[in-house]
Picture 1 (cartoon, helix red, strand yellow):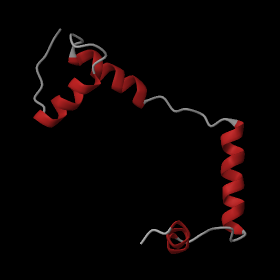
Picture 2 (cartoon, one colour; picture 1 turned 60 degrees about the vertical axis):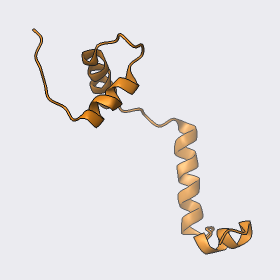
Picture 3 (cartoon, one colour; picture 1 turned 90 degrees about the vertical axis):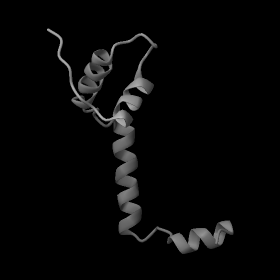
Picture 4 (tube, helix red, strand yellow; picture 1 turned 135 degrees about the vertical axis):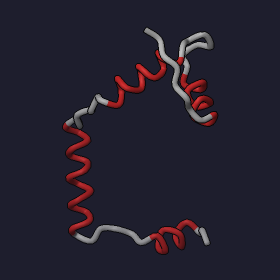
Length: 76
């Protein structure tokens, strides 16, 4: 059973951009969004190790301020 919904023009434009092909119905685009929104990707071992290393760097003060990085890169 089909139904009609009201959406803002900017939302419709976003849905249009997300179509896999020009004739794909909006219902398929919305269905895909719903499917992907419920999927949570598990972090792999390499990503977990990288996060642990970054946290260790922060704890040991191995960080740079925005000002220091800007100065080093010559950015004002």
